Length: 111
Ligand SMILES: [Zn+2]
Image 1 (tube, rainbow, N blue to C red):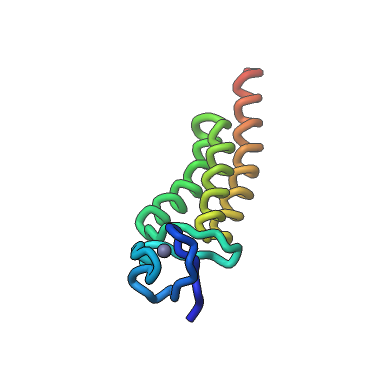
Image 2: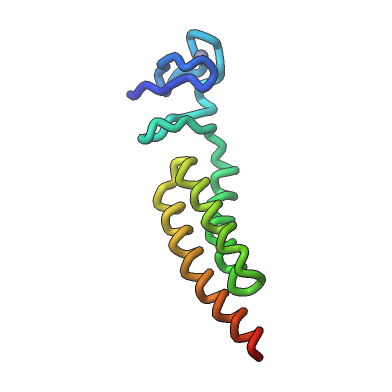
């Protein structure tokens, strides 16, 4: 069992508590990750962000290199949300596909 910080009042609360004993905020809706960052637990949203983080870099190749920045941005969001592995992979993927996208655009411009 670990203690987390209430997002509303900052009190230390058991992560298994339903509500903050100090202010009554619903505890089961948020968690604190190992960097001490408190984030809302919205598993459905997390899945959407993780999928978006892997898809955005692909758009850099097929649509526009600007999606490299979108991919890096979403990767950073996923790291903050607690998915460090996915976030890191997405940033690496974004840079990789960003370079490929830039070359493709360069060749299209020359031709
Ligand atoms: Zn509280």
